[in-house]
Image 1: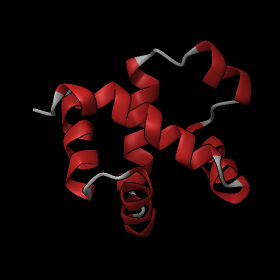
Image 2: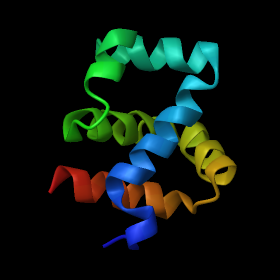
Image 3: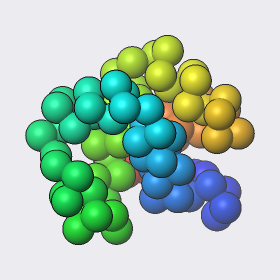
Image 4: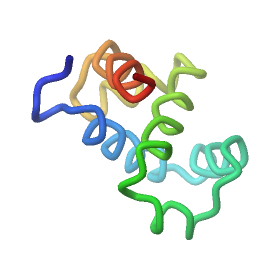
Length: 87
């Protein structure tokens, strides 16, 4: 289980901010998930969105590692968030 400060929804939201910080990456995320920008605003607290974020990163190891480093977490913390959100 993640530390409270790094709980799964918080990790997912931090990762989402990282994804959205790059136009190509955010376009790929939206294309792969079928989400639209309005969906992100409307579903920001939705566990399904959180799960989609960490699944997106898990599907691309280079993004997972880069995101983890940029948001100050170990890649394993993002993977743990993915497990928690699937549970």
